[in-house]
Length: 240
Image 1: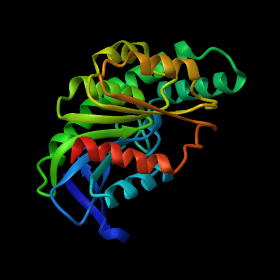
Image 2: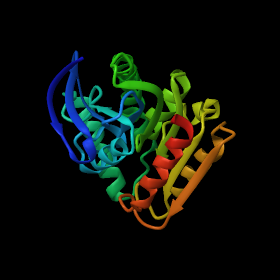
Image 3: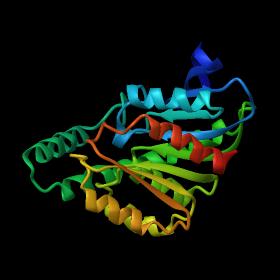
Image 4: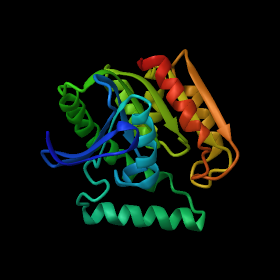
């Protein structure tokens, strides 16, 4: 892991860009160390610099957590194949036209998850070697399919917060029954991009004995800010 830049933010949070082989990432760490770690991913490959993710990361770091995000293979600013670009275009067109998107979604998101999980695990290995990070580890993000797979294959993850979840590949829907860690599941009731009933069915499928559903009125980007505070309290219960 090689740090390429750093800046000191308010609340004594240090923000550093890093590279790990071909993987670019950002790490936010609080003034107190060692700190528990939160892996934070945004929806289906949006860039790590997406403003909503950065705002959540900085807030969470100010609450005493190390927070890390990466651009996994095919995500953010990393190169994409012509097939990936076509799949994204087909998905956007079908959603805008109100056409069925299940098969397009499966062909696009399924491989994206398969390629992303090993890179997140490689990043986790490197992060846990840093003296300022002490574990345990949590996951937080709108990329629910990635979070499900990581929760199943990565025993170091002790708790997870998921956003939405209406469109999740069939493989991860089946894997949801194997997820047993504590969960906080956020749902926007009027989310135009995530069918409500599918999200509710996914919540029901999780095998966790401790799982909480927070539903709020509004569209996809309308999650109330207080949910970030509640999310940190959830992390406090399970990571501190």
